[in-house]
Image (tube, rainbow, N blue to C red; front, side):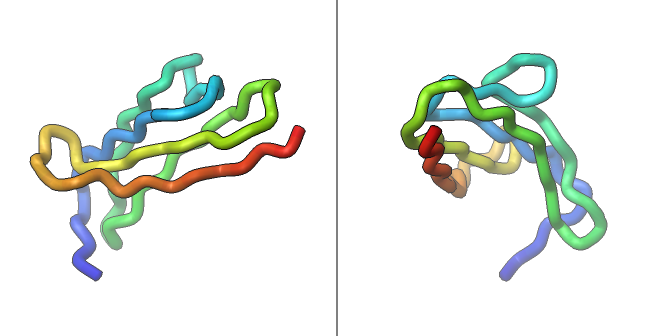
Length: 72
């Protein structure tokens, strides 16, 4: 409910063996004018849960986490 436009957003894969662009477990994006940031995650080959945490880079705020269930 409190969008932050043009902020550096760090996405981190915290569970699972997938990767973001470039094969990394971390991806730095920037929020748009509406405060929305996005990234592309490629899931690994193993079924199970994957977790991604997102937060404003260098912020002391708690990250937002979401989980994905891959059923293989």
